[in-house]
Image (cartoon, rainbow, N blue to C red; front, side, top):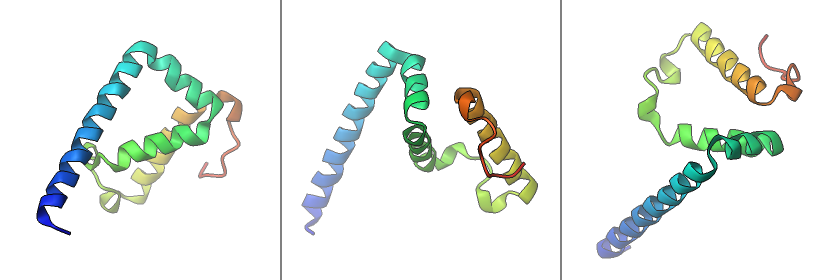
Length: 100
């Protein structure tokens, strides 16, 4: 691919990302937590995918990458995440097959 096309492609991708994030922020400011809670209740799979996509794209937020965590720390994180899911989606409490 030509270098000038790569630059244009990156520029277009960045502009699209900026505009999308601006629209997302505007939507959040209008609908806020109610929209998040509705997605969690109506489509928990989509909710988890959203979280996963945001977390995987923000590695700087994680002070301890998974390969640096002990088994106990990984279990603690799983339990914390499971508790959050149960708090937001109480009707599914206890159906996980994860660690107890």
